[in-house]
Image (cartoon, rainbow, N blue to C red; front, side):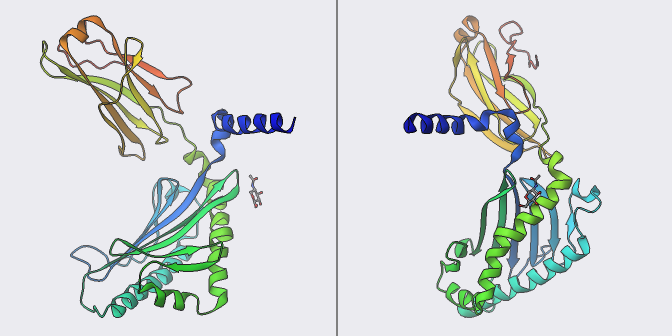
Length: 311
Ligand SMILES: *[C@@H]1O[C@H](CO)[C@@H](O)[C@H](O)[C@H]1NC(C)=O
């Protein structure tokens, strides 16, 4: 009986994410990406910070303006954050960050070199519970030091990082603060932001789908099925020939398409014989669509034309 119950339970867990109302409980994430340059080139600030809510730009900060500037639509949400306070916080973090970069260069006795220091940290909420966090740094593109919140401690990944660890763990309370930041403060901030921006992050923008053909009639042609303007990012695009799903030949990447939306495409090569005997359609599966959208290629009839049609 116990086995049966646990099999049922694990089945329910497996099926869980497919239930529509479950998809809106997250995960949601708040993350920060910092970059420091020891010798910034023309037009580049020595320090830049970008914050994200999920995959959406939240705010930018840099060493030139020294102001946290919210991105649209967060900039329109009165009260979501005290941007003066946020600017002060980022200034303080910039200072610590740039001192650390200088410390590393001193360790390597490299006062004049051109080096990059990157930091990334953030947290995740699933069903309103803290469900993940990370905090790590890289020097010249290589792992440098990482926070392990279970120990808790900074784990060095580079000889120079031993010095950094000593500095950042000089007092026990520093480590406890870092842990509390990831496990409590960051999720609490994210909860606060979600009160304003959850609807925006949960939005469902359906793809507009078009098919174009390229190549000369009478020879092998390529068919391109393109989905544009959709959100969220996850999508599946397939070519269907007759009743068979075709392997994706190329495409399948998902790229930003402006306005915080995404685009993707898949390509299929079709021989003249194939064109005569089979119908081709593009199937698009996306969370905004109640069921997959199937768009038929009208090429067999409209040979050689650059067809585009949605149905
Ligand atoms: C989420 O969790 C926090 C603290 O754990 C609680 O105060 C808040 O009411 C919860 N929100 C929802 C929508 O359940």
